[in-house]
Amino acid sequence: MTRAIDIESPDSKVEVQASTEPSPCHSAEGDGPLPPEKDRSKFYVVIGLVYANFWMAASFSLQAPFFPREAELKGATPTQYGFVFSVFELVIIIMSPVYGKMIPRVTPKFLIISGVLIGGLACCAFGSLDYVPAGTWYITLAFIVRIFEGFGAASLMTASFTIVAATFPDSVATSFSLMETAFGFGLIVGPTIGGALYQAGGFVLPFVVTGGLLLLGCLVLGFLLPPTEAERSSESRNLFKFLFDGGIISFTFSIITSLLFIGFNSATLEPHLRQFNLKPVVLGVIFVITGGIYAITTPVWGKICDKGVSPLYINVGGSILVCAGLLFIGPVPFFFFDPSLGSVIGSLVVIGFGLSAKLVSSFVGALKNTLRRGFPDNLSTYGMVSALFSTACSTGAFIGPSLGGLLLDTTGYQMGTVVIFAIEVAFLVMLMAYICMSAFKKKKCDKESCEREALLTQGRIGVFSRIFLDNYKRVTL
Image 1 (tube, rainbow, N blue to C red):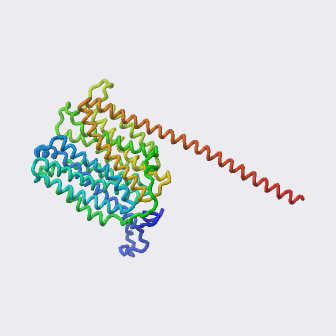
Image 2 (cartoon, one colour):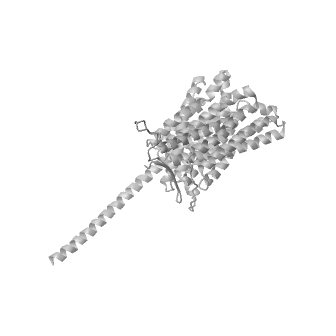
Image 3 (cartoon, one colour):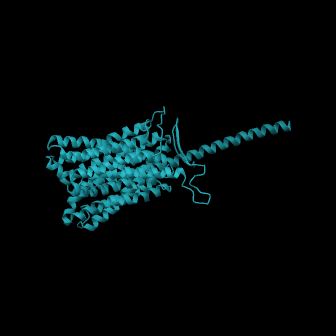
């Protein structure tokens, strides 16, 4: 391994070299040397991206405790302010492939800083909606600001995964899991931060504080992220070849089904818990169980992936855990026992473990699958995989709440979990079929390779035999 952070392309190579000259801070008396430049640069990348992802996620989720009430006071209907929440994910679905396409032409650093800048400005602007008159103008401006916030989040998410894959080629899973942990904690802590600041200073304060911290992040990221050059390759990327592969399709559905459940549960769990007459504090704690378990366990699954365990097998294990949790969270109607608070909490814990396993292994598996199929190991490929991950996440997060509301109105929570369980089982069957087909294909290729090698060996022996006989005849004659 080189002692540098390499980001290679056909026409450019950027390195952050480890210093080989004596450091002026390394005294002759034998003080310990400073960390190598390479290690410090990687550490700065992690710190910068964790900071940005945490506050971007917090800016997305902080309005949950108070915005619905404020929007109703401004004359908005539940359908209208519900779409204000979901349009954020819709923008990410649309823009992530666009940013992924841009990465070979601009730099990940530029997309990250510009995304944080747009997200920070949009967050501050959302706070100013308090001064907008009630009615059409209020909900229209809320849509517009939320759309720009989605632009910033899509830029940050796509470029973050790209620069992580480029900077940590030997520990992609662990590094990626740190980003997911930061984003997960941001989503969990965001409503708490938003509620506390709203209580302290009204509607404006949560958005100004969070937006200000994002704007501060632009300066932080400008100093901490390593410089990279755009990759101006004349080679065109075959998106159809990238997308239409059994492995990529399986990992994409894994991501979508994971976020689909999270969205479904966010829209339907509270009505299901009303039967237990819980206090608001307890209710809030239950809501963060799955997200908390997910955020805590993603580094563990990342380490397991980096140790060489197949992402496909980790994905199967995660899907089985999710299926098991779905059976008991309702519980499903054909389980003849009444729901209890213990069964709900236990199911959420199990599902949290399963979701973290599925999401981490899906990103790592998609990247390894793409490189194994001959795509170049460069920013262009990382951008495609990152865009796929962001788009799949937002697709599931966009569909989940809508499907959850529909199922809650038509079938109730228990039958709704049956539908989500059926979707997860269908995905698990598809994933197992792909694994079996891959194993069969590999076995067939190995057999053909052995037969080809045997024929080549026999051919070489035959040639050597003829040469030996010809030489023998010459000598005897």
